[in-house]
Image (cartoon, rainbow, N blue to C red; front, side, top):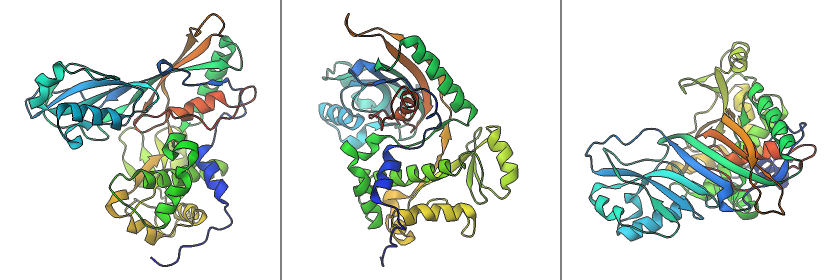
Length: 380
């Protein structure tokens, strides 16, 4: 592997801070404070599928799985054990958070259709099975619809609604929500930050989908996002940037920053950041964008050889720096009891892989509220 480059004066706590407290675009606007997840019913996730069951006999059935108080992996493990099949025989499009009530689509072999109908599992409810021609794969979804109740507000509900509207307007006007990875990606207390960076430094890819490596990749992305925000580059292009077309999703390399800045301002394009891996699409070597991506690696003490050694376990990809918040709705939520104050219910949609924590932190933080690192609130 050779020697790793030494971090260039960037302390370890800078990496933790970048990971757990990514940039805010509304920090100067009053926040609502409050607490999330006082109870499971205060956090609802409904998956927006990429397609409906096609009704064709192709060896699979699709059905909705509603779970409470368990991760998607735990729910799949419980279901597979009850059906007497392997974990790989259950397909799903995205992972949903443990501390929530969530509904998502899964697929299982069609031969199990009758057994599904009479199945009763603690914490899991199954919808009716529908014929489908293929197995669900990771990423086969458009996004997720969230309904989150925030209690113990720092202000009355009407004021909280006004503050949230001001923040949502700001985000829409400035290109969208910073697309940071949420704190649950880094484990309890953020312990995965150091472990994840160490795994990438050592080129230890491990099993495909290794969550330790994924945590390290997320730290690096959040640091890249922080640097772009600090330098006013969230909606400004650098030559060499990998830009994404918001209508088609197509990626291309920026060669004319001035021209692309106009399209960024119009919302036609969005800047992407690297999910560093062994084969990440990267800017040209001599470009300002490449220099910035290398700066992030240097700050974390990671070299290109370590990335290449990750192999197929972490190929790498690109992730938009900002995303649109869809169909946001705000209303008062009932108090828990007669002695409790009213709460605020926030409903909104985000694209697949985005973290609801990021939006909640924007709304909760600021003068009159508080700056929060967030609690786990993500769906992919």
